[in-house]
Image (tube, rainbow, N blue to C red; front, side, top):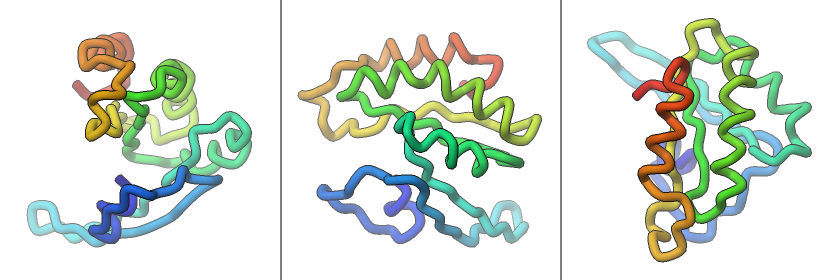
Amino acid sequence: MFSRYINNEFSYNTKTTVGVEFGSKKIVIDDLKIKAQIWDTAGQERYKSITNVYYKGAKGALLCYDITNKITFESVDKWVPELKSSGDKEVSIVLVGNKTDLENERVVSTEEGQKKAQQHSKYIKL
């Protein structure tokens, strides 16, 4: 998702993020020019100590889980509170089920994703 948005590129061979990747993109919303700074942080526990720093002051977050990997989905329950405690007090969080092109390998249903978003609806935009 990061490479597709920042560089308008897609590769089936994209490697998992290790540590942090950074990119920026200029966008216009209602005649307002904005430079979005985007940090792609690794979800693995071993990178937690360095990724928390990047949440500080965050205005928005895409919290992605892999629909073919239940562990990433279950990690949502720990990532939401971390984002709320480290990000901007009004941070907007969007929950995204990733890898939908691998539907035949799906282990997390759409309904489960919707239920998880509703469980965290105080923080996640529905």
